[in-house]
Length: 97
Image 1 (cartoon, rainbow, N blue to C red):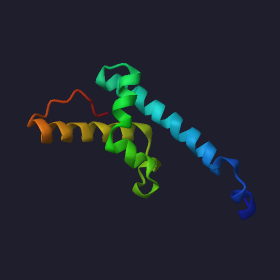
Image 2: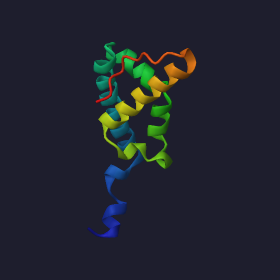
Image 3: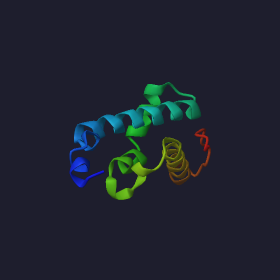
């Protein structure tokens, strides 16, 4: 494929990239909903408030290159660490796959 075609690739447009990221966040929230046993909207809220979500949106971290299940695992690790640090308690119902 020529370099000019790559530069004009509509998939590379910011709008399309935003739609792809929105889809991914939704799929991650559905997975977290299953793991946490909460409604998807609650899982989405928790994910949006997490450091994992912030890192997913930062290209420098490279987290966007990993699959949705890996990102869900990262969220669970973060939640586990947060609970252990703040409560002195490691009970976490977020299951790592």
